Image (cartoon, rainbow, N blue to C red):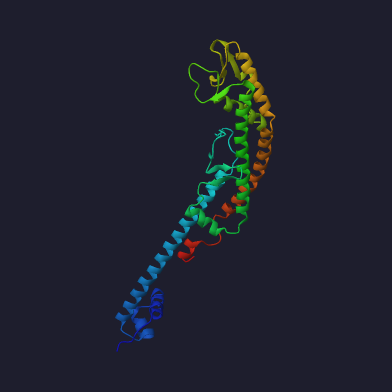
Length: 306
């Protein structure tokens, strides 16, 4: 009966063969069998080793791709950690039951006074869940939570400032706001007036250079019975004949009051808090990115045998 040789035997033959020992030598001195058996065993050992090496390379490549995907999500989260641009569009209508504000790689959602939040665009995705599995107890999540809370408070403050602008403009001028005023008919305030008043107060409160809105930017046109915003030449109000200058002054009064309102003060307070939270969160994410590799494991890592 032919002698049976184990996988360990064949691996030893391959090792000897690669040390320049001949098949005849291995058969005579180690295996005590036909050289053809040794040759066959060496071929089997080589194929098995090549298959293992190929599998290892595949697993290494899969792990590398996996970590690169996770790091890409972290990079995108980092890109979201910035102060909101002054021109972020925020809704203002009082009857909105819910609203959203799109931010870079994130979104502000408002349902009620008790429920307002900022979430990253990856929230709920598998890749985001895997990232959280890798970094279960990392301090970064605490800083990100604080940043999201601070951002939600600040964006909400902007919404309240815009809503206050609408109220003040109607109170001061006695006119009603209208999206698209008809060509003829009642005297109205255009929605553009809200944006102008809001921008003026926001710019003054945050000290944004180059975006200041002065009194001279609000222009009265008695011939058309209109008040317009000089920068875009957009009508912001239509008044009764002979009352255009008065309407302009009332709009300026509303803007001045808006700049010193409680809503404007809340803008300044939440902005300062957001600056601090942004700095801490950005540093926490950068520390992880500097490693170039995520510690810990997730379900994908375990399936790959890492």
